[in-house]
Length: 129
View 1 (tube, rainbow, N blue to C red):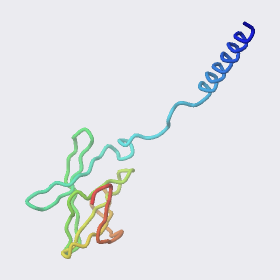
View 2 (cartoon, rainbow, N blue to C red):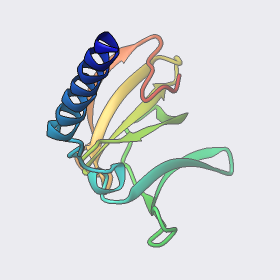
View 3 (cartoon, rainbow, N blue to C red):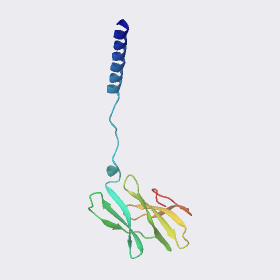
View 4 (cartoon, one colour):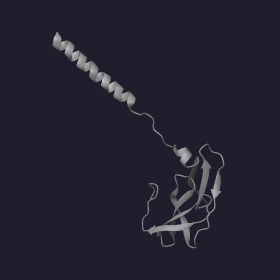
């Protein structure tokens, strides 16, 4: 009987220590949602008469607008190859030249300040080839 009481007390103390430990741990996660990080904007490519166009829209479907780029001569947009930066201010775009060489460019969210970042035979951005 004495061992049973002793075991019960030890088990109770162990359970109590786990409870105290659990309560002392901070359980909240501090961070920003993706909506906040990208200012609630989605960018996507849309094909219009065999030409790719970059569009942006708010998460709720409002403020849909085409983003106009002045592309270098002989370059075109490469399908499914545009992503937005986490802060919602920069676009990363895959362009292709007439020889099918791929290039990575960045620009402001409004299409201005287009500049080359990298070139390669096969680029992947945001999980898209």
